[in-house]
Length: 474
Ligand SMILES: *[C@@H]1O[C@H](CO)[C@@H](O)[C@H](O)[C@H]1NC(C)=O
Ligand SMILES: *[C@@H]1O[C@H](CO)[C@@H](O)[C@H](O)[C@H]1NC(C)=O
Ligand SMILES: *[C@@H]1O[C@H](CO)[C@@H](O)[C@H](O)[C@H]1NC(C)=O
Ligand SMILES: *[C@@H]1O[C@H](CO)[C@@H](O)[C@H](O)[C@H]1NC(C)=O
Ligand SMILES: *[C@@H]1O[C@H](CO)[C@@H](O)[C@H](O)[C@H]1NC(C)=O
Ligand SMILES: *[C@@H]1O[C@H](CO)[C@@H](O)[C@H](O)[C@H]1NC(C)=O
Ligand SMILES: *[C@@H]1O[C@H](CO)[C@@H](O)[C@H](O)[C@H]1NC(C)=O
Ligand SMILES: *[C@@H]1O[C@H](CO)[C@@H](O)[C@H](O)[C@H]1NC(C)=O
Ligand SMILES: *[C@@H]1O[C@H](CO)[C@@H](O)[C@H](O)[C@H]1NC(C)=O
Ligand SMILES: *[C@@H]1O[C@H](CO)[C@@H](O)[C@H](O)[C@H]1NC(C)=O
Image (cartoon, rainbow, N blue to C red):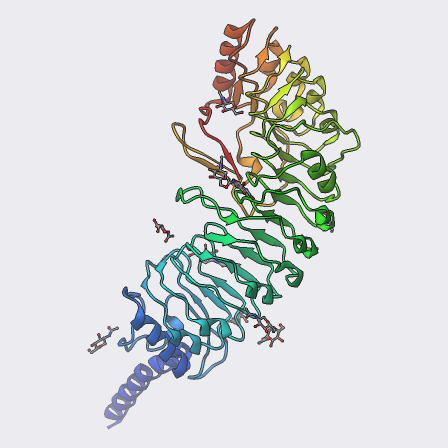
């Protein structure tokens, strides 16, 4: 009797245990039925399936446990879905409106999928949405959003004009519309985007579809974004001078206006020197055939990278550059600069990348270049935020390189395609950090020495990068 009672008790215990565990599970994993319905509707509209989403399993009956789904921290059977992050899940098909029933959603991430056709407008009435990332899909159409702080629309083949409605997104901190086919005038949306810190509208080099086609002057209102830190308008046909009120962009640290048909380098630099925090400035392929200004009052105290190649600039290397004491990266290649290479280059504490190739520089290589500190000791610390945009890509014959950070570039001195002559100083051998030295051609005396030197330097450093055939600074 005692034993039977014990056994029964045991069996009951076991039974109750086996019932209790899944109950606990289902309570913590079950989401609000409306949210479950919304996700079911969403899933039904897709042409692909999300394998980890399982309606039938008794072990995991609730959607809070599904891949990519985040619920709030409430308990019970009414947990609300607050995050849906399904990046790179090979999702194919369209997004249907049922998703708009997830009215507590704060984060929506569909990046790197094959979703397309249209984006339901209702989705942008989600009251609590903070982040939408639908980059790298195939969406068309534009929308209006409310509490949004970050909008990544890059690589979506969006064409047509950029909706004025974006100006209604007054909480935007980051706006990335690069890699699209926007056309027409860049609308005057910026007065209302007072919190904007990052704006990129650059084009996509990889599709070959080319640039955005914003035309006409850079909107004046851009300068009302006082908090703007990074701005990339590269590869748009702005065809104008830089508006004077860019002076007001006091927070600006990284700016690319490469290949935007910008004119007047003198006024551009005079305006931008008021952006005291500017550390990276890319202006390649502009100012066609202008004189490089030699205005000693120009001052860029915090500039660490100046990318001013392929502008057909004339004149000598200007002396105001010698006062950019933080300079680490200087690209003046593919211009028509003449005169000598100034000896003050050797005085830069942090310069590790110097490209003066394909100019008309004459005379001797200054001995000072052998004193570049950061190429000797290798102690140069490079403090820089990761750029929100790509700085450089190269391909075509050479390896395909793309850099987001200045510090990823190989320490380089490139003086090739000038008309230099004279000795190659033995001191170059001390530049132990150097990865790439390209002295000639054409180099009159000591070309053979130059070759030996290149080999030695590459040997010391262990490897050599071939010179990219094509350069595209963003
Ligand atoms: C769930 O089960 C039903 C009936 O067995 C089946 O038709 C359906 O395809 C299943 N759904 C999933 C997502 O496995
Ligand atoms: C749930 O709570 C944990 C710890 O309290 C917190 O880290 C997490 O962010 C919360 N999640 C949500 C979605 O609120
Ligand atoms: C979206 O998800 C991808 C990974 O799939 C991630 O790289 C990206 O940073 C996410 N976007 C945001 C805004 O968090
Ligand atoms: C938006 O954010 C604000 C401030 O965080 C908040 O008070 C508000 O409830 C949110 N939703 C809407 C629809 O404004
Ligand atoms: C954009 O459109 C072009 C041509 O229509 C197509 O080749 C390309 O794959 C599309 N890109 C994306 C991301 O859908
Ligand atoms: C922007 O907001 C204003 C006022 O709130 C509204 O009248 C207008 O329709 C909105 N624009 C768009 C494109 O949504
Ligand atoms: C410059 O931009 C134009 C479009 O505005 C594009 O066709 C061209 O390829 C770009 N050049 C470079 C070197 O990026
Ligand atoms: C840029 O726009 C100007 C007119 O604003 C036009 O003359 C020029 O051809 C355009 N350049 C390119 C590369 O489209
Ligand atoms: C400029 O940079 C300094 C140091 O990082 C920072 O303290 C300051 O707030 C910045 N100025 C502006 C206007 O953003
Ligand atoms: C030199 O620059 C010009 C443009 O100024 C370019 O067309 C040419 O290909 C460049 N030459 C070399 C060897 O890089």
